[in-house]
Each structure stands twice: as structure tokens, then as C-alpha cells.
Length: 429
Image 1 (cartoon, rainbow, N blue to C red):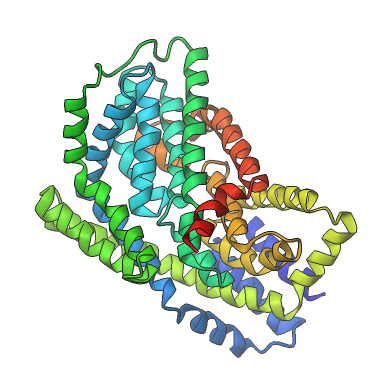
Image 2 (cartoon, rainbow, N blue to C red):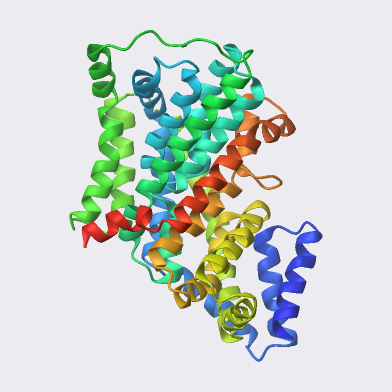
């Protein structure tokens, strides 16, 4: 009965267009006050005590670091470097977009920040060169999804906190899957561009020389050093993930102000205000979601779901397929932060019960939710790319279909080839 009231009321609130964070809080309180033996005071206690977590401090720091990097001229340097790497190819701007997003992902930890930073510079140029306004925004939105897969990743931090999984191992686990997704998106772009001859027929960049390539590397050296500093510091044992996030903020500030000299006081002020705004919403959602997850655990909902799944099949391959289908649906309609906090305590025990490594499952969960960034109706990356490119969300959504299919194919490869995720964490042990 508790489960029915909890999920039934949540579904009704969502149908009423109640914001996801408020809907989770209301459904939790309603269930506690009607059919559960848990006191209402427990809701308050769990919400606040759940936020009293040192690793969670990494989230606002990584957010601020990514925003400062974007305003500090890093995206321009990375785009230029990406142009030197793949600019000689026909349809180069599409590949440049993907490569630049992969570079920026290793700095920001946020899919939305990646789309905003790279998209504002590349989408207008793609449209001017007749790539098609829908495709220009769609490839940027899709490549921006890599922002939460390649470390440092804010969702990996949250999954690690909620699931008691090593954040450092999760960061390492996301590297190869993130590169795989980037390569797959470039291959998909090639076929899309080849099919539509009106988009582009020849290279947009002149031939690359070693001299120009080395110059681009030197110009982007401060941006390229950021992931080395962050990840190297973590795996070298110099600081924790949270401390690395704080170091990233200081580094982003110094690079933007003194190295690139593009980060002004107004940009710093805007970055701080944007971070405060996003952090406020995020932490509220995490707090109520932790109380929601606590109620699920008390009522043994994960155990019940696991028993129900066993009635369908006890084959790990089938179980993983069902979980992926479920997560793809959730990612399309639920905010990433809320989905992570609510689903981690439900699905992680089930995954472990069926022999799936927690680190591998963390990658599967985050990749699923990354696809949700480009899947209507929520599709945050789609809306950001559409706004940046000044194109309707309908055009972007249609153009994104082959790219979403590509992302789903990558998801299943990552799901059923665990060595892609576990190779680097195992080597680091």
C-alpha cells in the first residue's frame, strides 16, 4: 500500500505539472502522513542530514569551475585545437563540435555547461555554412551529453555519494565510454552529412600542418592542463574529489583572469550568481530525494522490485535489458539529479544482486541519463542548443533522432562489455 501511495501520488503530481523536486517532496510527506509508520519529522531529518555530506560539496565547485572556464575563453581555445585535429575532414564542423565537447567535458562535469559553452561558438558557424539549423543544434546537444560521462562528472559524484561507490573509480570508468560515445557520434555525423548533400560537401578548414597544430596545443595548454590537474591530483593521492573541485575553481579563475585575460568582474559575478541559483535548486532536490529514497528503503521497495523482476527472468542479460529500457524512459521524463538520487538506492542493490559491478552500473546509469539530455520531452540539452541556435525545438528533435539511436547503441555496448568501464579502475588498483 505504501508503494502504491508513494508512486501513485508522485505520478499524479507530475501529471499536474508540479516541478519534479516539489512533487517528490509532496509525495514523500503525503505517504508518511497517511500509510507509513515513519514520522513526518523523519522527512526533515533525512532531508537535512543527507545534505550534510562532504563529497556533495564537489557539485557546486565543479559547476562554478565549468562556468568560469566557459566565460574565461577556454571554449574558443578548445574549438581551435579540435579544428586542427579534425578540421581537414569533409564536414569538419560536426567533428570539431564533438571533439571540443569531449575536451570541455573533461573540465566542466556538466552536460548543460558543455552545450552552452561550445554551442554558442559553433552553432552559428555551422548554420552559416549550411549544415542545417536542426542538425547544428542536434549534434551539439548530443555531444554535450558526454559532459556527464567523461570525468569530472557531477552525476558520478552524486552516484558515488548515494551508492557508497568510489568517486575516483567512477571517474576512471567514464573515460573509455565517453571516448566511445564521441567516436560513435562522429561516425553518425559522417553518414548524416553524406546522405544530405545540401549540408556540406567539402572541408571547412585548410590543411593542417604540424606547426599550426603545435601552436593550437600551446594556445590551449591551460585548458588541457585542467583535467590533468584535477584527475592527476585525485589519482595521485594529493587531494580528494571535493578538494579537486575546489582546486578547479581556483585554477579556472586564474586562467580566465591572468592567462586568457577574458574573465572580467562582470563574468565572475554572473558565474557566481548562476552557480548559486543552480546549486539552490539542486541541493533542494537532493534533500527531498534522499528522504524519498529513505522511505523506499524502510518499506523494502528495492527488495520487492527485485523479487518482481525475478519472476520475469533471472538472466543478467535480460535483467540489464529491462533496467536499460526503464532508465531510458525515466531519463526522458525526469531530471537527472532527481533520477539519480531516487533510483540509485532502488536499482544498485538489484544490480549487485545480479552480479553487476557497482562501478560498471554507475556508468550504465549515468549514460542512460545522459541520453535523457537529448530525448524529448525533458531533453535539457535540446532546449539549450535550440535557444543558442535560435531554432525550434521540433527541428532539433527531428535532427537528433539518428544521433539518439547512436547513443542508445553505445549504451548497450557499454552495458554488455563491462571491461570498457572497468579496465582503467582495475588497472589503478
